[in-house]
Amino acid sequence: MPAAVRGPSPFAGPAFGAALILALTVIAYIPSMKAAFVWDDDAMLTGNLVLQPDGLRRSWLTTDQANFWPVTWTSYWIEHKLWGTNPAGYHATNILIHALCAVLIWRILRRLKIPLPLPIALLFAVHPVAVESVTWISQRKTILAMLFFLTALVSYLKFEDEGRRRLYGAALAAFVLALLSKGTVVGLPVVLLLCAWWRRGRI
Image (tube, rainbow, N blue to C red; front, side, top):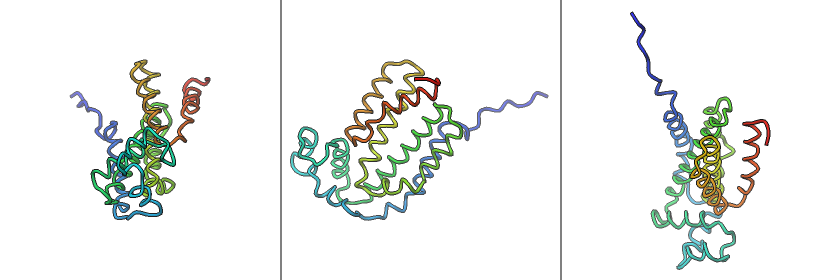
């Protein structure tokens, strides 16, 4: 009697990995939903230029802001329209951004064929080193820039594998958004060179 043919396990696919990362991140950070504004969160929100009349335009087209992070300021502007000064909404957004970053790290590690990509991504998702950036609303700039940085990286790696020009365009656009969130992501080209060396043994 021939053995039954089994299909692929639902616990081995990419959907399961992404769902596991998202679920574990939410479980780890859900206590922060009860947190209030801390340190300079109030100034970053209620005292931010972007919330003043004509503030959104000035955040993009002038140097009136202390730092030129217009994508970060726009995220605050959108959320203020959604939930005003209720800190829970801002915390929820930060948690979601961090979870998406962990999923992108997992995808990048898989594409680079680095061993144990899922455990590494899960460790990043819950590691205490990320707590300040996730739970401190004023650190939105850091995790938002990382989200676009990782999006640019995974898009470029896919472009190298598949050769589709729109993936190159997506990588470039994501890199620009990352720079407009926080300028410390300027090192992406160096990271791409390191990825090339990892994949091919040369640059």
